[in-house]
Structures are given as C-alpha cells and as structure tokens.
Amino acid sequence: MKLREIAQLCGASQSLGAELAEAEPAGLSIDSRRVSPGDLFIALPGERVDGHEFTREVFDKGACAALVVHKRLPFAAGLGADLGRLLFVENTACALQQLATRVVAGWGRPVVGVTGSAGKTTIKELTAHVLGAAGRVLKSEGNLNTSYGLPLAVGRMITGGARPEDFDLAVLEMGMSSYGEIARLSEIAPPLIGVVGNVGTAHLEFFGTREGVARAKAELIDGIRPGGAAVLNADDPLVIAMRGRRSDIGIVSFGIESAAEVRAEAVAGEDDLSGTRFRLVTPGGAAEVRLPLTGRHNVSNALAAAAVGHYLGLSAEVIGGRLQTASAPSRRGEVLRFANGVTVIDDSYNSNPPALIEAVRAMAGGRIAGRRIVVAGEMLELGARGEELHRECGREIAAAGVDLVIGVRGLARGLAAAAAAAGSAAEFAATPEEAAERLLVAARAGDVILVKGSRGVRTERVVERLREAFGAGGAGGE
Image (tube, rainbow, N blue to C red; front, side):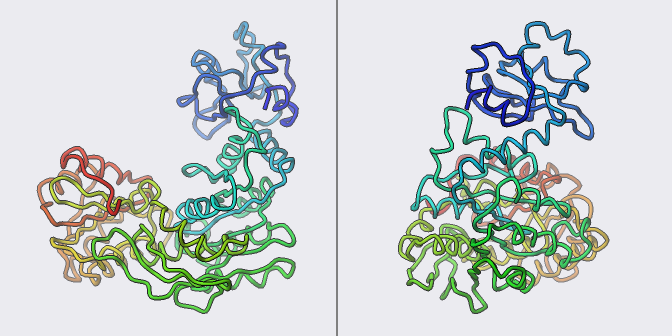
C-alpha cells in the first residue's frame, strides 16, 4: 500500500513529495533499533522512552517515513529535508490501530482470534498450519498479540509488496494484562472464530483470581461477529462456562477428559519425547495423528486448532495430516538433542504454574536413560500467592519423579526448597548464567533437561550456554 493511502487510513496530515507519496513501505516498525531500510517508523511514547527521540536515527537507518505527533517533536525544524518524510497525527498508537482496523474491514475475510493463559502461541501456530489446507493464512509472528503488536501483524498485509487480497484467512493471537485489552483487539480485528485455550494463574497480580482472568479472556467471546463461533476447552470449567455468554454464535468444544465435539482418544507420548500419538475424533470423522510435540497440553492445543479446522469445513483426515507436519514454536517445547547425548527441552519462552507442571509431566512420561532435570525460573505476575504457588510447584515437580531441580531467581528459591523437602535433589541459582554453569558440570549423557521460566527471568540464556558448550545437535523427532 502506498504511503499516501496509509496516511489517509491513519487520518494523518502529510506533505510528502510526489515520489515518496507513491512509495510502498517495506514494513512497519515501532522499535528504532530494528528499523530496516524502507520501513515506516511509528513513534510511540513509552513509559521510559519516547520513540520521537529517535526520529533522526531511523531516517539515518533508511526509514522511508515516520508517523509522529507534532508536539512531541520539538526538533522537527531541525530535520531538514527529512521534514517531508513525516506523517502527523494526534496520537500515534491510535493511528496505528485505526490503520489496522480499516485494513481488516476493507479486507473482509475470516479472522480467527486466539487467547489463553498458557499455550496460546502454540494454538495460534497449529491453527495457522492446519488452515493452510484451506487457503493463504496471515498469522501473528512471535508474540505480536498486544494493542501495538496485533496492528503490526495486520500491517504485513500492506507492506513489503503484500496486498490484503494475498490472504484468505488471518489467525491473530490476542493477549492481555488488563480488562478491556482483548475487547479493544477484537474491535481492531473482529473475529469470526474466537478460541479460548484455558484460564490459568498467569496475570493473577493484575486480576486477583482465576475468575478475574476468565472475565478478561471472555471479552474475546463478546467480540465475535454475530453468526460466528466460539471454540472452547471443555476440560477447563471456566472456559466452557463461556458458552452461555452469547446466543447468536455457534459453539465448538474440544477436550481430552470431557465430552466434547472435537476430542482426542488413546493419547500416548512417545518414549523418546519426539511427539504424542492420539486418535482425533470430530463430528465429521476420525483420524490417527502423530503430533510432533510432547505432552497432553500440546494435544489440547492441537484439538483447539482441529476444532477451528472442523468449523471451517476441513475433514478429520486433512486436519490430522496437517497436525503431523507441524513443529514446536521457538522456545515453546523444542526438543534439542546435543552431540554429547544430553537432551534439552527448551520451553524457556514463558511460564506459569499450570504450564510448568504440564511440561514436567510430559518430560517425566518419556523413557529416559539418564536423569530428569528441571530448570525452573521464577514465575512472574502471580501477585500475593506467588510464594505459595512456587512451593506447590516444587512439591509437584518432586512428585513427578524429577531427579534434580534448579530454581532460578527470586521466588524460585521456595520452589527449590519445597522440591528438596519432597525428596528431589534441588538447589537455587540467583541467575540463569549461574544455573547454566552448574549444568555444565552436572549434566551427562542420557540426561533430559527441561528449561522453563517467565520471560523476565531470561532462562533462554541457560539453553544458549548449553548449546555453546555441548556442541551441535538437532531437533528431536525430525
């Protein structure tokens, strides 16, 4: 899409030269550090840093133009020739959201919105992969699931040479840390299908109780277009209860333990942790599936994707075939096998108590020649129950038969202490770097190491250090 068209959709004032007005941005960027030549930079005012401060810098890096608020740019007169590269709006965040809203509205094709306390990125990835059998899919990249991230995902329809008509479907992740956030995302990209994977303890600091988290997640159901459908986890009482919120949409339930329209039977993990087998059952038929992801929680994620595929008319055989060629998103359960015989399950992207325990149980279910080791980073945003929940997790990890537990940072000290009291060998490391150094000494061939922690703890540094030290390996089951 041309810059002049983007300016019009944003409601921006501009005095672009004729040639620049006809230019098409290579991409949209809100991070001055990651601007690439040809990008349109959106200057967002942050809590600590205002993007307007980097306007000169992004032009030096080759940005084609910048979306700015004039009163936040007191040095505009000093930009010289670059002054003609500015698009002026009253509020850059609102303008970015307005751009995405108008692009989606003009496009008019199905949007699948995905949320959940744990596993929503995996559900998004699996859903997009399954729907690849139905058409060309736009999906959120990485964790672009916020009021900034989702518009950037939509922006891929109109930058880099892409056109909205290049896509038949969109699968967009919708995250939240406050009431009203998912409601706003649903206004930007109204979903035909809304998927709620689960309601857990993530964000208890902000919502107080799981019921509070459920209320915020249910905003996705409220935002579904009339005549659309909600895809709900029948195994989670707080999720399946959302079916009563609307009478003008369909409901497709999925589950393993509970009666559901789309379900898994005969779930069995593979001994080498390379995947999970199950029988997929839908109202339209059944299929045998070997999912190349470990654990029952990932089977549940796959069922959510299957339910979307079923609603959009795909057969069980087609859905099952697509699931078998899926892969784990980066740092969300990747199985890495190193040259020295050590296996690492890299689940370091994020963590909360239910997700941690599910990952531990998946690891514990494998046939392992060596020891089961868990590196558990501190879990953030748990509020007043944080210490209690860490200790509960420590006890459950020990009960799963884990041989060695290393708690990393802060409240993970209590997790390690509780695991030790319950019979596991356990220790505490103040930093991920310290945890990695201990593993370099302790790990030996045959061991399986699960690494999991909240993003702020940076447990991915443990995996990076092990990769450095243990030599080239490969993804399991490939």
